[in-house]
Length: 157
Image (cartoon, rainbow, N blue to C red; front, top):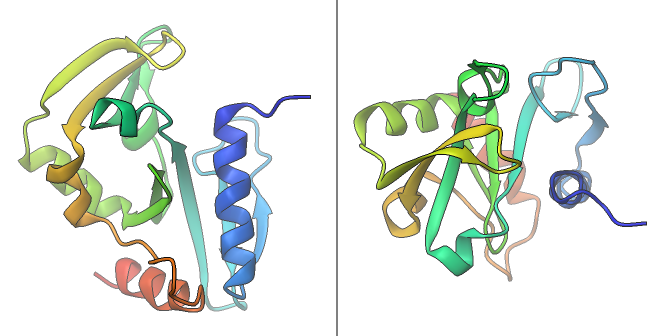
């Protein structure tokens, strides 16, 4: 049985968060606006949106979904109520939804694709080197415990 690429990305991030000490649950709501709820205790929790951008390394670009062209409604970045956006390129990269929205507002995309993904998404396409500075990632030798500090910093911006 094969995993849908989005679910595979979510499981990668879910496992990483658990290794960092978070308790995690997948969002099972019908019209959910985030993918994972990660919490440390009653006072600290984060809603996380995960995008598995399998084509990015091949293309040199990052695709940010912002509209469902089949349903003609907000999707991806414009519909999420997550705190944190995790974009998987060669590994998971984390930023705040607030920071990503600001970046997309202030930076014209390299191009727009009207029927990307599963042929139902408008995508804003940015060169990896242009968008990568707004993201945090863990280096191979870093302990995942740093993920707590990264997420806290992102949400407190």
